[in-house]
Length: 440
Image (cartoon, rainbow, N blue to C red; front, side, top):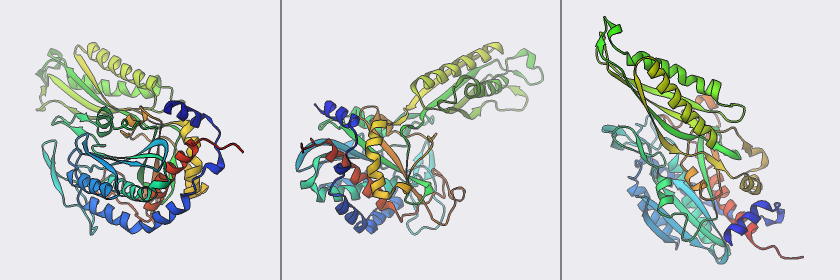
């Protein structure tokens, strides 16, 4: 019955008067919570935690949700927190997601709430920093929870608040990603009991205009996979290379060969793709041709068929080049995150909500991002809409701000309430649109 209702909702034309009467109240309450959101964000920023180690963060979130009268489940996907808010009227189940983890980055700068936290990552001591804005995501969703809980009696459905660990992944001591927070939460049933009909999420963007909402229907962020190529040659003296098989030369040829995948095998008029070799390890001395070489890299694609094509071409190119040089190449492609795919029908239905919150001129379509997001695991199961909220200081140009995942990453906090209003309004508008229309 839920699937049928969702299908009808996505297929039906948008009804203008379906905009919720709660919107003015939401806007007022979001503005009133502005300072509280900033305070939460600064506290989380000063106390970041790596993936699957978000114990303090999860504890604060869980306590907040319980104080709002929600059913709360902890330790979902290790350190995840899920809150369920049942509205006063029947209706769909809408999920909202925020990621909680920080990164192994040592923060620079002189913020009064600068992180001084250190931890061990891949066997090395490192600083820990919210260098991707997940602290703001948590603070924003906590405010959304407070607003919607205060309007519980007027909600026509159920809201599931998903505070997710390990969006950045968990890695083993070889630098290989072994876990994604969203993937594990899905496996543990986060989209069930009650069954989620639709999910929304946002990501802060340090390089985008402050307070502007950006979105893209369809493929929005890339699928990401890990590339690992081991080349086996034959060791020899550097003065007599003809007696060996040089894995460094073979590896160099493979790197160049891989560049032809995007330029010659991929239909770039449909979707972009990226194949990057990020490291080559081989040899120990200037006059010894080593026995082996090891390459690692990243692959970015935007479609299922394209992903399969690129993977196959990598294997063909590497193994054949190695064989032509007298060596052998073993190719391993570790499956990472799928494409972050915004359901086009859902985007069309909910776009008026975002425009109503922020104004048409401050809701913009953007090109696809080659970064990746494990929100995609939720979207594989239910229709989802993932959008971006700009937080670049008004006095800065895009090329003047530090990027995500860097020590100088910085956000302007002035318009966090836009995210609060957007997520809250998406929930109540979606619920209203899902209600049976009265005959006139």
